[in-house]
Every structure is written in structure tokens, then in C-alpha cells.
Length: 122
Image (cartoon, one colour):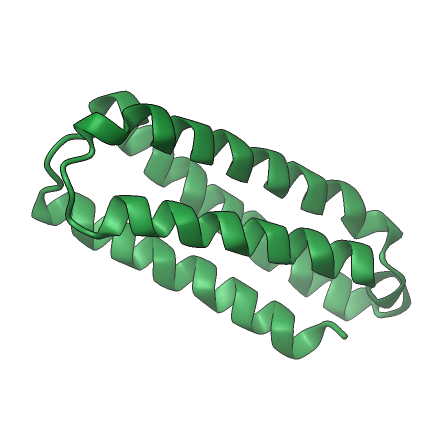
């Protein structure tokens, strides 16, 4: 389990960095390159997690947990993709209320996935 857990921990750490960059209310124009790099790192971390799912012993041994993990992981990825499509790094500037609300909701959504993983996977 450690490979998948390690990959999820890496993904969560990158998400935390990205969260700080996009939710602190800073003008993001000067951070476009930084946000783009962090988004690329996050996408790579998500790919690693996805690649490890099939090899995880706990998920292989518990079909119901496997299905639920995949469902939650897919929902998390979809939420991230929707957010990034709506607000590409090149379009970021002064965060407005709509952006801030969406960023906070994404943080909650991703946090719920990570909390669930922490509770369910050993």
C-alpha cells in the first residue's frame, strides 16, 4: 500500500502548494508561470496515483473499496479539470468572488478525498 499512499501524499502536498497560490487573494498575474508549473506537477502526481491503483493490494482485495476509491478519485480529477479549464493559468489575474468561491469549493472537494483516503486505506 505504501506506493499508492506515498503517491497520494505527494499529490496532496502539491495540491497544498497550489491551493496557497490560488486562494490567498494575491494578484496571480505575476504567478502565472509558477501556477502553470504547479499544475503540471499536480497532473503528473495524479497520473502516478492512477497508475498505481491496479497494483494496490488493499484495493485488489476489497472490490467495494476499489470501486469507491475509483469513483472518488475520478470525481476529484473531474473537479480539478473543470476548475483548470474554467480558469487557465494564463487567464488568472486579480481573483474575483466567483474564482475565489470555486477555488474554495475545489479545496474542500480535494480535502474530502484525501481525508477519505486517510480513513479507508491502511
